[in-house]
Length: 161
Image (cartoon, rainbow, N blue to C red; front, top):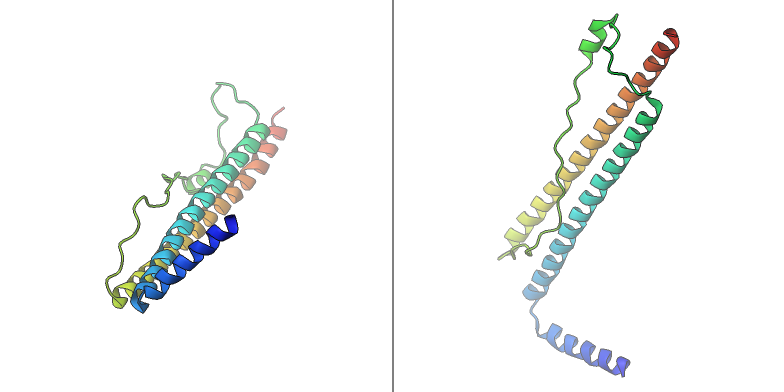
């Protein structure tokens, strides 16, 4: 029964597919491709953001475990104010989650429009890759800064009994 139903659906699809013109087929292919790219882009962005947030939380947890709890007493006087003033202040960028679009993208009316749209999608994909690379670089800079900070804290803890 199931096989018969599937066969009927395939036959109906073939009948309707043959009735389509080349332009309609091309439009359907472009529409499916555009939708798949939009979904993939949104999914990749969400996964990268989630991975970055998880990694950041892990690093913060490790740092909190290694850092002794501080008393409310004033911090010790710093002997090298020039070294601390040279270090750039880190500002956490505001991050928002982006989900896939609720409405399907507009259909291109002509092939020139479709080519322009594909070019825009490539530009957007490149922009997303640049954003991801910038986040990776910022993360590696933060990790390097933390690794430099950890040995200096350990040496200052050993110096003061």
